[in-house]
Length: 276
Image (cartoon, rainbow, N blue to C red):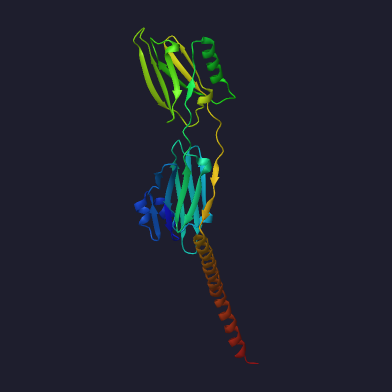
Protein backbone atom coordinates (compact mmCIF):
# COMPACT_ATOMS: atom_id res chain seq x y z
CA UNK A 1 0.00 0.00 0.00
CA UNK A 2 1.27 3.46 -0.88
CA UNK A 3 -0.26 6.74 0.35
CA UNK A 4 0.47 10.39 -0.39
CA UNK A 5 -1.54 13.00 1.42
CA UNK A 6 -1.69 16.64 2.36
CA UNK A 7 -2.87 17.63 5.85
CA UNK A 8 -6.53 16.64 6.21
CA UNK A 9 -9.02 15.85 8.93
CA UNK A 10 -8.27 12.64 10.91
CA UNK A 11 -12.03 12.08 11.04
CA UNK A 12 -12.16 11.96 7.24
CA UNK A 13 -9.46 9.27 7.19
CA UNK A 14 -11.30 7.32 9.89
CA UNK A 15 -14.56 7.37 7.95
CA UNK A 16 -12.92 6.37 4.65
CA UNK A 17 -13.15 2.59 4.33
CA UNK A 18 -11.45 1.94 1.01
CA UNK A 19 -9.03 3.36 -1.53
CA UNK A 20 -11.75 5.11 -3.57
CA UNK A 21 -13.05 6.99 -0.54
CA UNK A 22 -9.55 8.00 0.56
CA UNK A 23 -8.67 9.16 -2.97
CA UNK A 24 -11.79 11.34 -2.91
CA UNK A 25 -10.43 13.28 0.07
CA UNK A 26 -8.64 16.55 -0.77
CA UNK A 27 -4.88 16.07 -1.12
CA UNK A 28 -4.96 12.26 -0.63
CA UNK A 29 -3.91 9.54 -3.06
CA UNK A 30 -3.86 5.85 -2.11
CA UNK A 31 -2.78 2.95 -4.30
CA UNK A 32 -3.04 -0.75 -3.43
CA UNK A 33 -1.22 -2.13 -6.45
CA UNK A 34 1.01 -5.07 -5.59
CA UNK A 35 4.77 -5.15 -6.17
CA UNK A 36 6.06 -7.16 -9.13
CA UNK A 37 8.02 -10.33 -8.26
CA UNK A 38 9.97 -11.66 -11.24
CA UNK A 39 11.83 -14.99 -11.35
CA UNK A 40 15.16 -15.22 -13.14
CA UNK A 41 17.60 -18.10 -13.63
CA UNK A 42 19.46 -17.61 -10.36
CA UNK A 43 17.54 -14.91 -8.48
CA UNK A 44 14.26 -13.10 -7.91
CA UNK A 45 13.65 -9.37 -8.26
CA UNK A 46 10.93 -7.42 -6.50
CA UNK A 47 10.11 -3.97 -7.89
CA UNK A 48 7.81 -1.53 -6.13
CA UNK A 49 7.09 2.17 -6.45
CA UNK A 50 7.73 4.47 -3.49
CA UNK A 51 7.42 8.03 -4.85
CA UNK A 52 8.05 10.74 -2.29
CA UNK A 53 9.62 8.35 0.24
CA UNK A 54 13.31 9.03 0.83
CA UNK A 55 15.61 5.97 0.68
CA UNK A 56 16.87 6.75 4.19
CA UNK A 57 13.29 6.43 5.47
CA UNK A 58 12.77 2.95 3.97
CA UNK A 59 13.13 -0.15 6.12
CA UNK A 60 13.15 -3.69 4.69
CA UNK A 61 12.86 -6.73 6.93
CA UNK A 62 12.74 -10.43 6.10
CA UNK A 63 11.05 -12.70 8.62
CA UNK A 64 9.55 -16.18 8.28
CA UNK A 65 9.53 -16.12 4.49
CA UNK A 66 7.97 -12.66 4.22
CA UNK A 67 9.55 -9.49 2.90
CA UNK A 68 8.14 -6.39 4.62
CA UNK A 69 8.81 -2.91 3.21
CA UNK A 70 7.85 0.18 5.22
CA UNK A 71 8.70 3.83 4.90
CA UNK A 72 7.36 7.28 5.74
CA UNK A 73 8.64 10.71 4.72
CA UNK A 74 7.22 13.95 6.11
CA UNK A 75 7.50 17.12 4.07
CA UNK A 76 6.28 20.65 4.58
CA UNK A 77 3.01 20.09 2.75
CA UNK A 78 2.70 16.33 2.24
CA UNK A 79 3.34 12.98 3.90
CA UNK A 80 4.27 9.95 1.78
CA UNK A 81 4.45 6.37 3.04
CA UNK A 82 4.56 2.77 1.81
CA UNK A 83 3.67 -0.48 3.55
CA UNK A 84 4.03 -3.78 1.68
CA UNK A 85 4.35 -7.44 2.71
CA UNK A 86 5.30 -10.04 0.09
CA UNK A 87 5.63 -13.83 0.55
CA UNK A 88 8.91 -15.11 -0.87
CA UNK A 89 9.30 -18.44 -2.72
CA UNK A 90 10.64 -21.34 -0.68
CA UNK A 91 13.94 -21.39 -2.59
CA UNK A 92 14.65 -17.69 -2.03
CA UNK A 93 17.84 -17.00 -0.05
CA UNK A 94 16.58 -14.09 2.04
CA UNK A 95 19.85 -13.87 4.02
CA UNK A 96 21.61 -12.63 0.86
CA UNK A 97 18.96 -10.13 -0.24
CA UNK A 98 20.02 -6.66 -1.45
CA UNK A 99 18.01 -3.51 -2.16
CA UNK A 100 18.54 -0.43 -4.31
CA UNK A 101 16.43 2.73 -4.46
CA UNK A 102 16.55 5.26 -7.30
CA UNK A 103 14.05 7.84 -8.52
CA UNK A 104 11.24 6.55 -6.33
CA UNK A 105 11.64 2.94 -7.47
CA UNK A 106 12.79 0.30 -4.99
CA UNK A 107 14.32 -2.91 -6.36
CA UNK A 108 15.01 -5.88 -4.08
CA UNK A 109 17.16 -8.73 -5.39
CA UNK A 110 16.96 -12.15 -3.69
CA UNK A 111 19.27 -14.96 -4.89
CA UNK A 112 17.96 -18.49 -5.29
CA UNK A 113 19.27 -21.27 -3.09
CA UNK A 114 21.06 -24.17 -4.72
CA UNK A 115 18.80 -27.25 -4.99
CA UNK A 116 19.05 -29.28 -1.81
CA UNK A 117 20.27 -32.84 -1.96
CA UNK A 118 17.49 -35.44 -1.50
CA UNK A 119 16.94 -36.46 2.12
CA UNK A 120 15.60 -39.90 3.04
CA UNK A 121 13.70 -40.81 6.21
CA UNK A 122 14.04 -44.35 7.51
CA UNK A 123 10.80 -46.18 8.33
CA UNK A 124 10.75 -48.19 11.56
CA UNK A 125 8.37 -50.90 12.79
CA UNK A 126 9.44 -50.32 16.39
CA UNK A 127 6.49 -49.48 18.64
CA UNK A 128 8.86 -48.08 21.27
CA UNK A 129 10.03 -45.41 18.79
CA UNK A 130 6.44 -44.37 18.18
CA UNK A 131 5.90 -44.02 21.93
CA UNK A 132 9.07 -41.93 22.18
CA UNK A 133 7.81 -39.64 19.44
CA UNK A 134 4.55 -39.14 21.37
CA UNK A 135 6.53 -38.29 24.51
CA UNK A 136 8.49 -35.69 22.54
CA UNK A 137 5.23 -34.16 21.34
CA UNK A 138 4.03 -33.79 24.94
CA UNK A 139 7.28 -32.19 26.16
CA UNK A 140 6.49 -28.68 27.37
CA UNK A 141 9.92 -27.23 26.67
CA UNK A 142 9.80 -28.11 22.97
CA UNK A 143 7.51 -26.76 20.23
CA UNK A 144 4.93 -29.27 19.15
CA UNK A 145 6.23 -31.10 16.04
CA UNK A 146 4.30 -31.68 12.85
CA UNK A 147 2.74 -35.15 12.60
CA UNK A 148 1.66 -36.71 9.33
CA UNK A 149 -0.40 -39.93 9.46
CA UNK A 150 -1.03 -41.93 6.28
CA UNK A 151 -3.02 -45.14 5.81
CA UNK A 152 -0.65 -47.72 4.28
CA UNK A 153 -2.50 -51.01 4.75
CA UNK A 154 -1.00 -54.01 2.98
CA UNK A 155 2.50 -52.55 2.96
CA UNK A 156 5.37 -53.59 5.18
CA UNK A 157 7.78 -50.99 6.62
CA UNK A 158 10.43 -52.18 4.16
CA UNK A 159 8.06 -51.49 1.26
CA UNK A 160 7.73 -47.79 2.10
CA UNK A 161 10.14 -45.07 0.99
CA UNK A 162 10.10 -41.47 2.30
CA UNK A 163 12.30 -38.77 0.76
CA UNK A 164 12.45 -35.00 0.34
CA UNK A 165 13.06 -34.21 -3.34
CA UNK A 166 14.91 -31.27 -4.88
CA UNK A 167 11.64 -29.31 -5.23
CA UNK A 168 11.07 -29.38 -1.47
CA UNK A 169 8.24 -31.91 -1.66
CA UNK A 170 8.02 -34.88 0.69
CA UNK A 171 7.44 -38.00 -1.40
CA UNK A 172 5.94 -41.09 0.23
CA UNK A 173 5.89 -44.13 -2.05
CA UNK A 174 5.45 -47.87 -1.62
CA UNK A 175 4.49 -50.96 -3.59
CA UNK A 176 4.42 -54.70 -3.03
CA UNK A 177 3.46 -57.66 -5.20
CA UNK A 178 2.57 -59.64 -2.09
CA UNK A 179 -0.73 -57.82 -1.55
CA UNK A 180 -0.85 -55.58 -4.60
CA UNK A 181 -0.94 -52.50 -2.36
CA UNK A 182 0.45 -49.23 -3.71
CA UNK A 183 1.16 -45.84 -2.17
CA UNK A 184 2.19 -42.59 -3.85
CA UNK A 185 1.70 -39.27 -2.07
CA UNK A 186 3.40 -35.86 -2.12
CA UNK A 187 3.26 -33.17 0.54
CA UNK A 188 4.39 -29.55 0.66
CA UNK A 189 5.98 -29.07 4.07
CA UNK A 190 5.93 -25.92 6.21
CA UNK A 191 9.02 -23.74 6.08
CA UNK A 192 10.04 -24.57 9.64
CA UNK A 193 9.76 -28.39 9.30
CA UNK A 194 13.11 -30.02 10.07
CA UNK A 195 13.41 -33.01 7.75
CA UNK A 196 16.95 -33.81 8.88
CA UNK A 197 15.71 -34.91 12.33
CA UNK A 198 12.38 -36.43 11.19
CA UNK A 199 11.36 -39.96 12.18
CA UNK A 200 8.82 -42.39 10.72
CA UNK A 201 7.13 -45.50 12.06
CA UNK A 202 4.79 -48.00 10.39
CA UNK A 203 2.56 -49.97 12.76
CA UNK A 204 -0.64 -51.89 11.97
CA UNK A 205 -0.98 -50.34 8.52
CA UNK A 206 -0.56 -46.74 9.69
CA UNK A 207 2.47 -44.70 8.65
CA UNK A 208 3.31 -41.90 11.08
CA UNK A 209 5.91 -39.25 10.20
CA UNK A 210 7.04 -36.81 12.89
CA UNK A 211 8.83 -33.64 11.81
CA UNK A 212 10.27 -31.38 14.55
CA UNK A 213 10.10 -27.64 14.11
CA UNK A 214 13.18 -25.53 13.46
CA UNK A 215 13.99 -22.65 15.79
CA UNK A 216 12.35 -19.42 14.72
CA UNK A 217 14.84 -17.34 12.71
CA UNK A 218 15.75 -13.84 13.78
CA UNK A 219 14.31 -11.07 11.58
CA UNK A 220 16.90 -9.77 9.14
CA UNK A 221 17.08 -6.17 7.94
CA UNK A 222 18.12 -5.40 4.38
CA UNK A 223 20.14 -2.24 3.80
CA UNK A 224 18.77 0.10 1.12
CA UNK A 225 21.50 1.38 -1.18
CA UNK A 226 21.23 4.34 -3.51
CA UNK A 227 22.99 5.30 -6.71
CA UNK A 228 25.20 8.40 -6.79
CA UNK A 229 22.57 10.39 -8.69
CA UNK A 230 19.85 9.29 -6.30
CA UNK A 231 21.99 10.25 -3.31
CA UNK A 232 22.53 13.74 -4.72
CA UNK A 233 18.81 14.11 -5.44
CA UNK A 234 17.93 12.93 -1.93
CA UNK A 235 20.35 15.42 -0.37
CA UNK A 236 18.97 18.24 -2.53
CA UNK A 237 15.42 17.32 -1.57
CA UNK A 238 16.37 17.32 2.12
CA UNK A 239 17.90 20.81 1.76
CA UNK A 240 14.81 22.11 -0.04
CA UNK A 241 12.52 20.56 2.55
CA UNK A 242 14.51 22.13 5.39
CA UNK A 243 14.42 25.49 3.62
CA UNK A 244 10.65 25.24 3.15
CA UNK A 245 10.13 24.40 6.81
CA UNK A 246 12.38 27.29 7.85
CA UNK A 247 10.47 29.67 5.57
CA UNK A 248 7.16 28.51 7.03
CA UNK A 249 8.51 29.01 10.56
CA UNK A 250 9.78 32.51 9.74
CA UNK A 251 6.44 33.40 8.17
CA UNK A 252 4.58 32.33 11.30
CA UNK A 253 7.02 34.29 13.47
CA UNK A 254 6.56 37.41 11.30
CA UNK A 255 2.78 37.12 11.44
CA UNK A 256 2.82 36.80 15.23
CA UNK A 257 5.23 39.74 15.58
CA UNK A 258 3.17 42.09 13.37
CA UNK A 259 0.35 42.72 15.90
CA UNK A 260 2.92 43.51 18.60
CA UNK A 261 4.62 46.05 16.34
CA UNK A 262 1.31 47.68 15.48
CA UNK A 263 0.43 47.90 19.16
CA UNK A 264 3.77 49.56 19.91
CA UNK A 265 3.26 52.11 17.12
CA UNK A 266 -0.18 52.90 18.44
CA UNK A 267 1.27 53.50 21.88
CA UNK A 268 3.85 55.92 20.48
CA UNK A 269 1.14 57.92 18.67
CA UNK A 270 -0.86 58.27 21.88
CA UNK A 271 2.16 59.57 23.78
CA UNK A 272 2.85 62.20 21.11
CA UNK A 273 -0.70 63.55 21.55
CA UNK A 274 -0.72 63.92 25.36
CA UNK A 275 -1.15 67.45 26.71
CA UNK A 276 0.76 68.55 29.85
